[in-house]
Amino acid sequence: MYEGVVQDLIDELGRLPGIGPKSAQRIAFHLLQAEAADVRRLAEVLLEVKARVKFCSTCFNVAEEDQCRICTDPRRDPTLLCVVEEYKDVVAIERTREFKGRYHVLGGAISPIDGIGPEQLHIRELLTRLADGTVGEVILATDPNLEGEATATYLTRMLNPLGLRVTRLASGLPVGGDLEYADEVTLGRAFVGRQAAT
Ligand SMILES: [Zn+2]
Image (cartoon, rainbow, N blue to C red; front, side, top):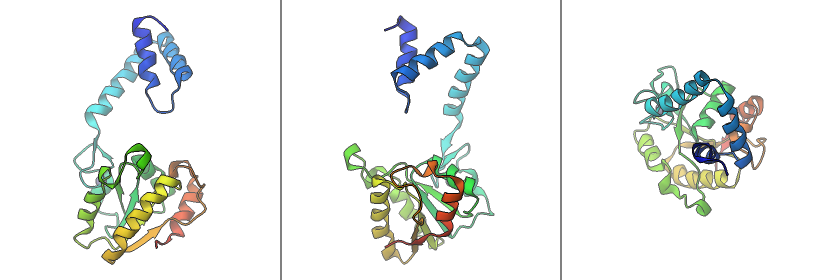
C-alpha cells in the first residue's frame, strides 16, 4: 500500500479492463515520473472524450453529433444492416473495407451469468429500425464465443419470421475469441462468405 493519492491512482487504474494490480502500479509510477505537460494532456483528453463523445441515437455507435458518421453518410447502403456487440467491432469491420452498409451496436451480448438478457441490449431499437422495411439483409456479426453465439441464435429466431434475409459470418474466425482480434483478411473473408442464419 502506498500513501494517499498515489494509492488512489493505483486503485483507479486497477479498475480499468485488462489492468491488473501490477500493471496499475507500473502505470502509476510511470505517470509520477512523466513530464507534467504529458500528464496534463492525458488528463485533458480523458475529460474531453467524456464531454464530447456520445452514442449515435440510431445505431449506438460512438458519435460526436446526434448521429454517427456512418448513419449520416449517404453513400452507405441502407438495405444492409450489420449487427455487432460493441463499438470496437464496428472499427474492426470497417478496417476490412468489405462492408458498405450500416451498423447496429447491441451494447454487449446475452450472458445469463453476468445478468445480461435481451432487455439489456439494444434489441428493441433494432426491431424499431427494421419496421419500415428499408433493410433487406441483417448480418449477424457477434463474437465467435458462447455469448456471441447465444445472441446470434436469439436474433435469428426473432428476425427470420420477419421475412428479412438474415445471415451470419462464415466460419473461419478464431473460435472463442473476439471479433476485434481477427485479422482483416480473415474477417473480410468471413464477411464475403456469409451464410443464411437458421
Ligand atoms: Zn449511427
